[in-house]
Image (cartoon, rainbow, N blue to C red; front, side, top):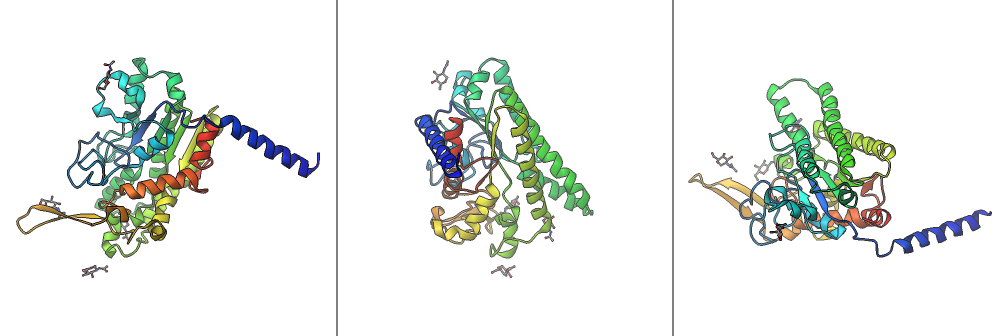
Length: 343
Ligand SMILES: *[C@@H]1O[C@H](CO)[C@@H](O)[C@H](O)[C@H]1NC(C)=O
Ligand SMILES: *[C@@H]1O[C@H](CO)[C@@H](O)[C@H](O)[C@H]1NC(C)=O
Ligand SMILES: *[C@@H]1O[C@H](CO)[C@@H](O)[C@H](O)[C@H]1NC(C)=O
Ligand SMILES: *[C@@H]1O[C@H](CO)[C@@H](O)[C@H](O)[C@H]1NC(C)=O
């Protein structure tokens, strides 16, 4: 067969596969989410105003002015945003998805909030009670997004000791990433095949770090950069290995690091103004009362408070994952991944 002929056969095969998959999009049963405040939708209480200002208009358990990533992932997969585990009314409600994420959580004990393995234990107990079956989870999607709290807790602890710790950093990264990988294997064991894993946004552009430079530029802190890049490299290696070793696994990394870097440096093309400057800041007035200042247009800010993205930023980030090449690893963009895996 000539190259030209085999190429046209390939094109035909691709077209046929695409046609056979038409209509199978949005076939996921439910979304199950694990992570920290970038994912939490109510396991840390409802929060206080101005959280929730843009949507739904009152605090709704989200560390944002509105929706967070899990809400947009759910929309993309055509399923309801998963109910915070704390707010589940009964077992059968968990069939429509559960959000186990908890603000402050990490893989390690970090700040003492329900770490990843215990979030997965909560799912396991629903499996053991026969509420969630393997076949249900096989047709569902899991989202795993955390890690930053592990590093910030670790950094705070190390700087309090003021010791030289470069060699410890590497083993800390391995502990954290392997903790994620181990729980991915557990999720596979419960039935999940479709799993989305967020990598670590580079901490050097986060307002709690850039405040030192009046939010004028990302920091050039080599410790933070080393942690983010080493974490992300190792995570990619582990996910690649799991996809290879676990039959039928469709684990995909969404490149949160690249997506937010894109917004911080090219935010203007999406209508963001001063992308490094947070929308909301808190201060104590002369009477010792905590006050806040709020930007006029949260939809033009990337970060809402010192750490957490705005609804507008999450919306753009999920769109990058979904439809732009290069914002995922170990798989195609999410729209193609959904088609391919009949998610
Ligand atoms: C579970 O709770 C949901 C939401 O309140 C309700 O609609 C549903 O009927 C309940 N199911 C059972 C089996 O109690
Ligand atoms: C940040 O702004 C404050 C007040 O405008 C100024 O005093 C300080 O020098 C600035 N710091 C840097 C690092 O630019
Ligand atoms: C880099 O960041 C870490 C963690 O926040 C901090 O402990 C350290 O002092 C910073 N280093 C420099 C040179 O600013
Ligand atoms: C305000 O004061 C409280 C109590 O002293 C303190 O814990 C908090 O960190 C202060 N907040 C700010 C934004 O300075």
